[in-house]
View (cartoon, rainbow, N blue to C red):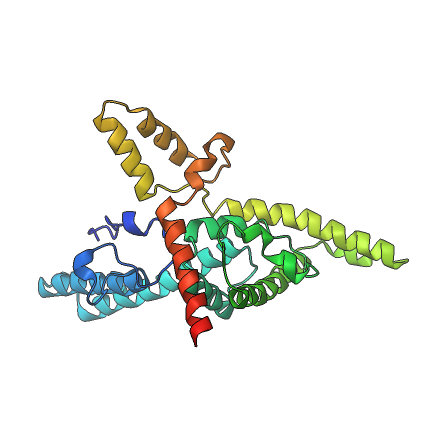
Length: 280
């Protein structure tokens, strides 16, 4: 972390092809995982602690100022984290339990972090969606999961939709509720209209904070290999891609796909889990 408080090591955590809170890109960190993804907030605090200790030793700040800086970091980080996660999920307020359960599910199934949040916006804000259809928009990031895991994800999804539906109701104009519902058909029409109008806005809002494209290792390596042979077309293509990471860019779809080895590893994990339960 620089003196300005900017990290120079975002690269490895700019994407997580297979979500693992204990992931660390540094092989020398493997025994203790001090710098793993889940520990990044604490490491940031530790860095600030070292910096304030140096300033205190030089008598540039006093102890009260040093303590304030540490407390300010912790409070600011949590405020920003809660705000970001709330917007990524398209919610009206932060829900710690919902997010904790989501991250646990993602870690269990080694789900791609970037693609999951991007696809989540495709789930309609409709609490009446049948269980067997709920996970369809997430099929690309939840391939070959067991029935047990499908049930776990479905349970989370239903809780999530209840939160999203609350958001739809909360931000629906009061005038809608003053309409006299003559029969069930009219009531259903109003419900459909509310969901359609809010779902479109919700998807746009979520897609504006959840990138479709990120600069993954295998993409960079492919561009580097070509450039070393004198072909810089892939470098230029990647630069064009990351200039608009939130846009759909239809002709660039392949750049949002997982590298083949990650898909293979995920399927191996699911197979091992299924085999282990069968043998018990």
